[in-house]
Amino acid sequence: MSKLISIGELSKKLGLDKSNKNKSSNYILRYWEKEFKEIKPIFINKRRYYSPEQIRVVKFIKTLLRDNGMTLKGVKKILSSNKKLDYNELHGLSAEYYKNNIKDRSKVILNKIKKLKKTYGKKNTY
Image (cartoon, rainbow, N blue to C red):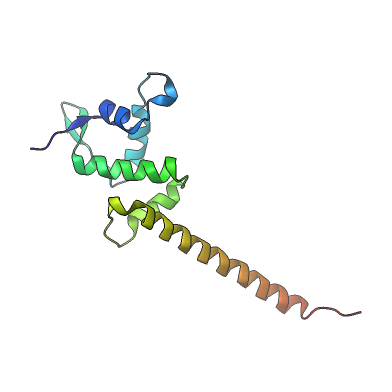
């Protein structure tokens, strides 16, 4: 069996304890566990333990949220995509997300411009 680490150890490993001056930041991991169905710790004697695969998932989520500044909704969208996630290809995946996000926003803006042109017609020349 591979080595399991506790929620406190994972919090320290991810650097989540830095913001609270040596206080435990386990609540962040518990919150992410509620938000992301991909995080499934193993419970032994009512304590949470994380496998190496779960640690990779949590690191990926932490990188997208904290380091890349993505929203919970954006991370959920990436995790729910049908692609097989390669946690080592993080930059490519987040770049693809941003590219698709920009495309979607551009389409919305173009539609608004078309509506304005339709409403007001061509430029008025006086």
